[in-house]
Length: 129
Image (cartoon, rainbow, N blue to C red; front, side, top):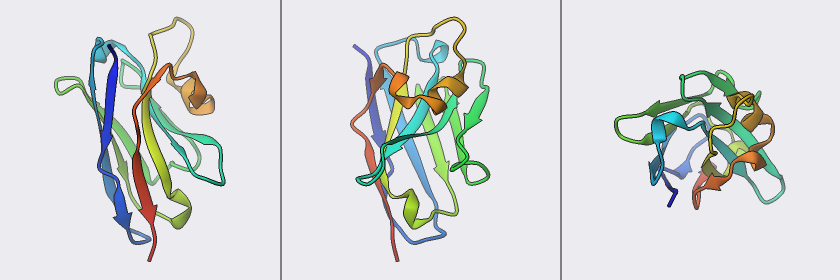
């Protein structure tokens, strides 16, 4: 059974930083594409960043130069480091994964986060003074 458990969210002031973690189990972690997406009450699902099994990464425009995605294949954990946070970054952050599919790269999941077959329960990020 695929299981993804996010953690690391919280309340942070504008300009602050957080590191989100996603602990994974139940699948061959190192072979699967992984990513983060977020959802806020007034917005739909937004792709944030994704990383494939080779370590290639793609960021949404909202994340470039501020967020960093990484994976630790020894710990079966995905990370998202958030810097220079803004109030509009507030929302529930989810990690996702999908069965490896030929012809689909990690950029696809940033453009279409609904394509993740599996996701966790999310971790809440609130950016407020």
